[in-house]
Image (cartoon, rainbow, N blue to C red; front, side, top):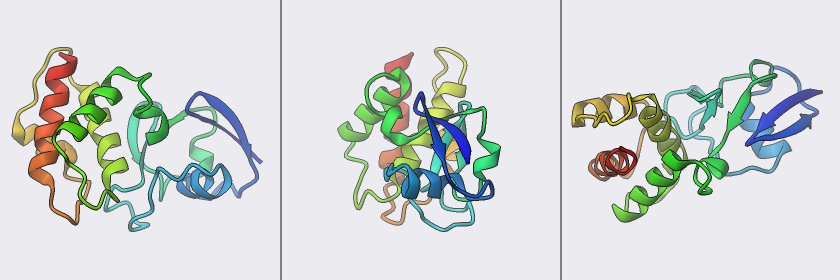
Length: 157
């Protein structure tokens, strides 16, 4: 049994401590917004925040999350998080999603990136590209992703 704080709620999950957080979220807690992509931390589809840092939940064991706070796409875009709400609004405005499969991971990475910037800092296109480089979009919507991240940065400035 492991205790996880997910989106501000305590959960007890009956999984092996080595189980990746992704599977505890999806299979045990029924939170399917976080996606499985590659299973080797290369595509970014499984990105969640652990104590505010973007991590790959497909390779991070449940044991690493005990006593820490996990935020998933479900909470990042529900309107309570100012930065997550700005990213979500920019994603819609710029029509970023095509197939949409990678988008929860993209949004989580963008949100963590924007939260890491000094207040009021507007990132360059190169900084956005570098921050988002760990997230693969098979549909190739990178220009729209870049535009949406820049828009969200302006919105939270």
